Image 1 (spheres, rainbow, N blue to C red):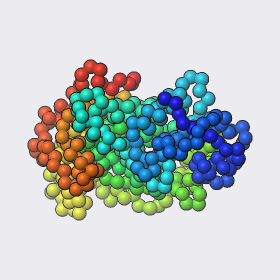
Image 2 (image 1 turned 135 degrees about the horizontal axis):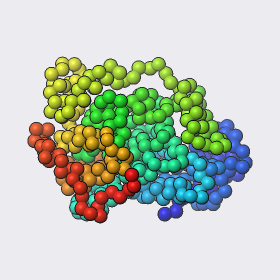
Image 3 (image 1 turned 90 degrees about the vertical axis):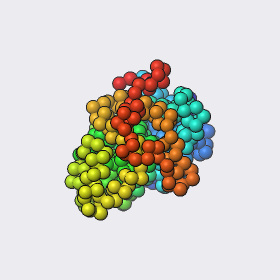
Image 4 (image 1 turned 90 degrees about the horizontal axis):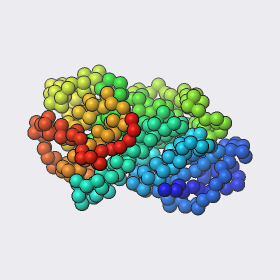
Length: 399
């Protein structure tokens, strides 16, 4: 699949404004890219070039840049070309168009519509299969890959960023993995990155869908850097990235570190008061024990956390616990293969369809989970989500 590029105008100051909304970027004439294209701002994903750098712009602004299959295929095709032998590409930058979102998630409603037609077919999990392949490509990309997560970053948007070496949050960043609320689980490699966060933060975020904002996204270990828009720091960082004569992981890291140090504040970490309790409670081996620990504690935090968990799909929470337990010892490819197995069973059961109906379609927020309690969700039932799937339907990516 070919990429759609935007043709660069002659004056470099105009390039900067059109492509990154930057000002005062002084690029040498030799850094200009030479390519031709059709200027089509209606494309769902845009691809730009500045010198040897390539810029991916998610461009479904009205849909908060939510990721669909067409976008997955175009990004994957372009990246495969850029990393191929003989390519002169030295760096990949991904960002979101508009003021609100990097990427608010995957096109979940479309996935459920496909699943309703024939939940046992390959088509029912095709979007997830291709998305996970892209996640793996990002996580193993030999080129420096910089994700500018400036705005809402959830679900599929996390998959486009979290496996990269450079993940730049701003004060506008809003992170969450809210999948247990719709009968799914934190996929896109969630079993890999969440299980590696410090203490029990990963399981806490996975089960509750807790939202983190701004600098807290870096403090939790999800973003590699935090760079504020104040005093034009974020805009200057982007400009300096594009003027690196030979962008390497070391030079990019050094540049981002310098802006990060100028951006960090002494504002309190929102999770700090609760970390001891998070690590104590969410290190317990079963969901029943987590419930019991929260019920026995009379703090406001425990009460709110328990009420949040009781709204989630019991099946989603139990398979998420098992997912993160297994993922802790797996590499990214193994995690994604496991997650596709989980997806297949998800598509064969009811909670995902019901969760999407309740949260995204009817928006009554009254899902009827089946089973509807953690006590009814047996360990034997949970294990069915991790069984191998028929030959030819497994996720085939190299470890």
